[in-house]
Length: 481
Image 1: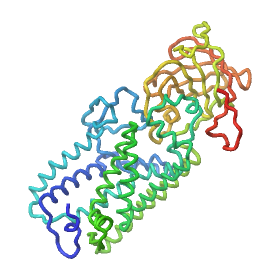
Image 2 (image 1 turned 135 degrees about the vertical axis):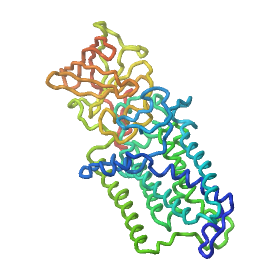
Image 3 (image 1 turned 30 degrees about the vertical axis):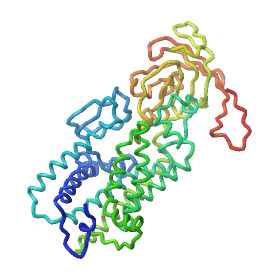
Image 4 (image 1 turned 90 degrees about the horizontal axis):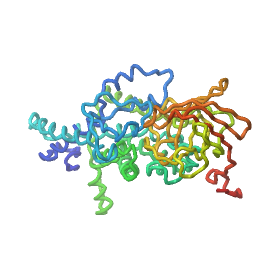
């Protein structure tokens, strides 16, 4: 579209037939992407517990996606979403060879584009005398800008208050490097560099602020295109689960920046003076002016101030990716399996035994993991969503392959039993209960029937292990393999 003709203030522009068609397609396409079409979204504004607001509520009120077609994961539990519910408005479910990560994941975008093309044809037949859509174009640019900053706030403040990539758990520190998926490796590099995580969050916050205000909107769009465009490429390269969300910020940034490109080219490439002649809607009546101020103030207070406070509160008291239930008292650590019996038969240590546990970790929260020489289907990629239940907080286990198994547990200190539930949603039914005994501070004995109904007896002895990653830089370390 010719930006000069579209945005000239001194005369009524005349758009070409192609420019009008391109706008109609763009309007319908972005309308479907940014305007919630689910009734449950609007009900949420009236059913939310406003007295006990949580960051999960802010996310739920930030909009919904256009998803009439669902991509089914290659196997149940692979796309782990914990307690997050899928929309119940799917008209069609399909299975793609590459799962939820490939080109097929954009099928709803292609559908929206197809509807836009057909709708633009019908719109053109009904509105043949229209000379331009510059006023509607202005509000579409504003709508896309606001949709971007509203959807971005959850990712932004979970980095500013570093909860999106929390500190690595012991189980992760004791997992071989090659057993992580590519996407999980991409995420956990932030987990031990929180300064960079916060920096990335502040950069995203700057994008939000720039998109909110008219004079800086082009800068915000350019930063979104550059910075989050990089995240889009990374998510595609590493099979990340937020590639569609990142792609929306990239596409939206390009769309909002489009009217400014001619002036940018003239100024920076041709090195000529530029007098911007962009069109802005004139809010003439007092009602229009008050509504504009009230709406912008609401967006700032709700999605900036309130969201920031709730994310800080979550970071301070209940980080949404780290389980909150305390584990067995003073059990945190890495344990060697000094004795292992199956059905009363001793199984000697072997690095290639597919039954015998090799080592065990207990976290300070209620997660236990063990390694066995066996392979299992992987769930999730980074532990998604702001979960309520500890068993659904899977940042420590998601995206982990090899032979590492992770279990949420609840200990009955009276009966001296521990009930384990698999954190891998592919194996969500693998639950079992073991008796436990602690003859010393560094020894735990477990016995009972495992998830395969075999009788097991396990003796665990805590290993005194130093983790250089979190040790002081000036400390002299002696690492024993």
